[in-house]
Length: 231
Image 1 (cartoon, rainbow, N blue to C red):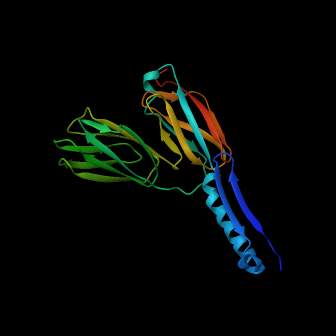
Image 2 (tube, rainbow, N blue to C red):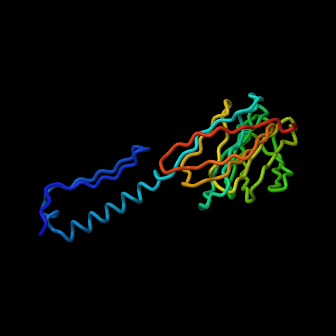
Image 3 (cartoon, rainbow, N blue to C red):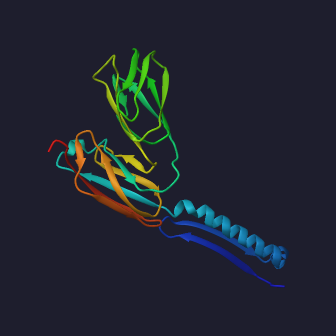
């Protein structure tokens, strides 16, 4: 029989400050060696499984361009991530004769709810090759869902109000983000590895090839350079 006065299981992720501490004090159950060993192994396994979410990394980047006013609404996404795709469910509102937000990104297989929050009729149509669709004119307060089953850039309009324009960028995986007005973005929970970065912007294009290496539990800073798409 093994007598243990105190036993600690300590799992720590230094970058994320994630910590699991399980303490066993001396009890009759601890003195029961077979039970104690099985319990330790089980809890250790649980701790390792629970910490897997913290074993990935984060990409925190910004857009650099001479056309600063176009930094926002840039879609940044990763290619070559061999992970199961997790579809998402997002919303785009029709409000004050605009689409809000104007640009979103979703992984393939995701659904977008288009809600008419104006007091007038709207419809939505897209002739984009990857995902063509047309929603008939519908009343204020009504929501119409669309599922996007192919990767690609989808441009959509309201035929009733042609000045209304929006974009859905459908990617092959969920590791993507839309930049804020200042060009900053974050892609969290990225599996460890080296990936190529791609972008979409209505006015700008990627300048050169950009890759990123994600390490376990680390936040990787990235600067992406974009130039005028017409140049």
